Image 1 (cartoon, helix red, strand yellow):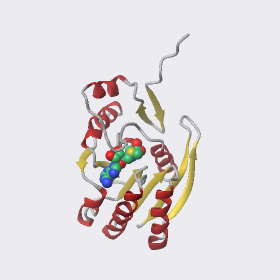
Image 2 (cartoon, rainbow, N blue to C red):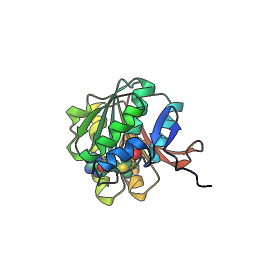
Image 3 (cartoon, rainbow, N blue to C red):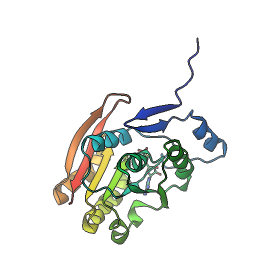
Image 4 (cartoon, protein in one colour):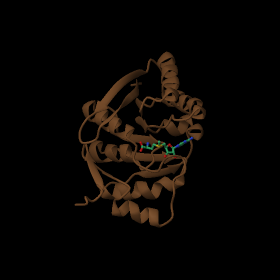
Length: 206
Ligand SMILES: C[S@@+](CC[C@H](N)C(=O)[O-])C[C@H]1O[C@@H](n2cnc3c(N)ncnc32)[C@H](O)[C@@H]1O
């Protein structure tokens, strides 16, 4: 007997489509291909959603999800916290996948095509919370992500959370933030319905 591939998972209240979901397959058929690893939902987003589910942020009216990919963390913030969310990514090709995922969850987020290094302190000052999952995966990303965190702290963003599957490049960035901003680096795991493990860098800047 052949079993059909799973087309979606439900995680902490959000629908996370897999690559076989009809809505995702439709986007792929249109010939859109993300090129900087925004080609699926990465499990570090589960770490963030689970952490935020258990540690509800005090300030979450406006949220930016940087390096959003298909955008599920921001979508969770819109759906669960009622936040006004900006989903930001360097790769414009992630947004059709994000839109399909948001539509399945019956929410909308604002789209911004930009790079970590281009986000100004003024832009960041509009947000209460910055979230990001698995964005520090190359040596060349350590400085841009670290500098973006510095600007977010300066801008008064009240909660800054970056989750990662514990890549050395993430630790290099997060340890620099621990020295400069007293960031916590918290080990985190989820078991069900999706198994994920890693670490979350948390800065409480309220
Ligand atoms: C590993 S994926 C993670 C996507 C999403 N956060 C998730 O958890 O499913 C990394 C994302 O970061 C984006 N990215 C890479 N470099 C970037 C940069 N310099 N500025 C903004 N986004 C970037 C990629 O396009 C990709 O969508």
